[in-house]
Length: 286
Image (cartoon, rainbow, N blue to C red; front, side, top):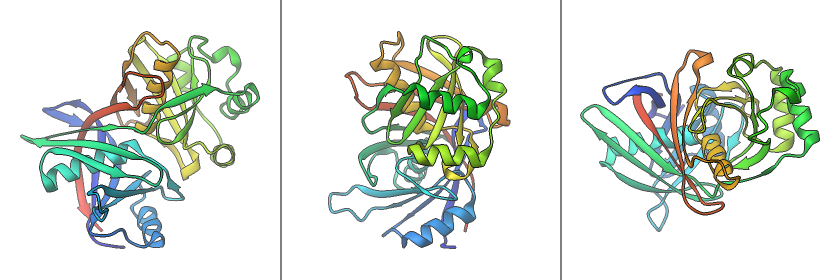
């Protein structure tokens, strides 16, 4: 494995004085990106849901970034971007850093002060459309849900905030807590449809959401915090007339890994979403 992979928990719960939980990501920075096969091997060895690789080798000063899960490359990863923002702030000082992904340009702002690390990203354009009923029924069957479990206020949607997601809103927190599925069947469905995750959410209030994100497409049963899905959800809610454009999302509770994401949809149909959270270092190594 290449040297210098940092480990950072993103979207930690708690407050600035005492953060805990968070979704771990590997972060590698250097002068030029390693060969693709090396990045794939490193991501598999690190074993987190994503590892981000970043190199400031673009003529315009952007950082070139790529994201890998243990089994596949993903187009955009929110929690790894937050982790990267934390590392860049520690290495280069507080600021806003321009990133070039495989498909879009985004920014991440990082700040490290007094032992507290915060970061926020601005996603690619966030869009959403109604999901075909046949696809919805197939996804419901995967989890053992029925149409009666769905929250009619938030119709099922195919949404994208840098990566594709199916959004299914559930009526109850209990139904969300009971989520179970077959990993192999989920992998087949998500890869066939091009979804990074299926975002299962419950709106406790118009501003406060609970979420779970099966990530079978990347070989991970469940992701404890999913920034790209948060962007996709907030953008879809904004464009569908939801009363709140800024939402708090609690994720990872059922995994014992509490995470908190703050998503604010920027004005304009299809506009990006700002997603923010706390971060903390959890170790370094190769």
